[in-house]
Length: 348
Image (tube, rainbow, N blue to C red; front, side, top):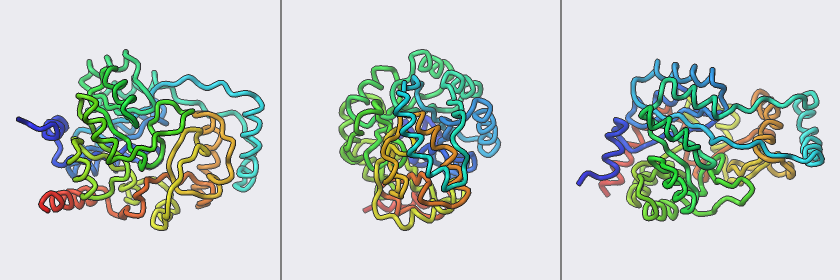
């Protein structure tokens, strides 16, 4: 009998069950292509991109590799209604940060990209898979992907979310444990995210659903990959492990901070949604964020200015719990090293 892992590898033409996580602000076409060329599955982060930018990055990725890869989007959401006093409080809380970075008072908010326009751009030249988080894809989007031959991969942080994803018709599910860096894939942004770790969540989901399960959260080396595979996952998805690669587009101060990590925090300060990263003054002092995506828009110029200036205290330092294990290697070399480590772990 052919194993689920073997089917997964064959479906995407992979040599190793390693998926590079889509990381907004960090992933580049060069990273995606390097991972694919090394035998893994690269993922392009497109959630914050305009349709034109999505098409441009798809073209660049295809120029760099002929292998299959994934594109990631956020599910469509209704812009939250924010009371005037809440918005005023959030703006006042951010005012000293704008002054610190030499920014003028907040003006018009940037446009939030619309999923309906993004999915059209993605499927104009369909990728091998579309991964997504924060909820369920609309049925029409599931149908569009199926018609295009694009595999759908939803993100779940609990058994209930995984079952809802399976019922919606997705092809695969990524089990995102509490150790994962950046945004938690939790469906309800207002609720506290699940605290279930990856090594507990994976077998729970494997037993609860019939579709293949990928594992994400705190996986940094071959030992971690081997662990989640032994629990029934068909592949391991790694994000933080790639942050120090030269293909990663995060600022150098962020890469340097990863080597000094003691612990991480889950914060809503930067985006309004729970996200894991390194603690700094911003995460400690910004206590009244409005809902996602409005808070994300309010802090965008602050984050951009902080990155340009190397101001580590005002920057969103997204990272998973295993960040101190991140290695400063080119993405291609890292996948090859992870492959050797996995082989050694399997031989023990």
